[in-house]
Image 1 (cartoon, helix red, strand yellow):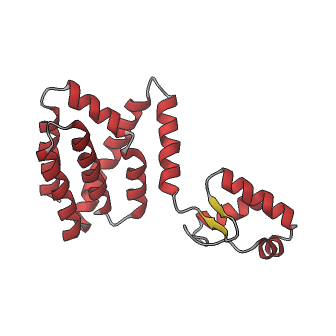
Image 2 (cartoon, rainbow, N blue to C red):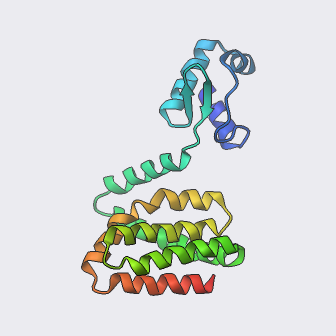
Amino acid sequence: QVAQKIEKLIFDGHLKQGDRLPGERELGEQFGVSRTVIREAVKSLQENGLVEIRSGVGTFVDDSMPEIMRRSLAWMVMTDQQNGLENLTQVREIFEPEIAAIASEKATLADIRGMKAAITTMDKTMDDINAFIIADHEFHLALARATQNQLIVDLIGSIVNLLAEQRRRIFLTASGGPQRGQQHHKAILQAV
């Protein structure tokens, strides 16, 4: 119950990423429980990836939440061997058009420069699959950042690495795949 209450403080924004949790004594008084109960609650939160315990320093709300999301989503996609990548494609089809629409309203010049830089890199690396895929990821992250919505950036960041295998297959098996992809990237940039 104490772990759930602390979790709620995190999810409600009372404790933000990187914030230090109050000490065991203070939390014990706040929740009316012993320090042992607090230790167990914090240990549970650590196991779930919500807090990080730094010896001699304190307990902090983990600031690597996108990494936790990425690992969780990767696990879900990879354990669903039959439908994982197909489901990922559906998620992209739902998210990406709306992300582009929001970006077209809120993008700054810096955001546009970031997208242009990624496209330039992709143009130069049509024969280097790894460099092309990294630049492709950067384009989608730059587009997400242009929404000015950190949650969107975190969500896209959490799936972008999962897309590497999908992009690798397209790059290797679809004749002209990178070139078609570039046409789409350039059209999106132009629209934004």
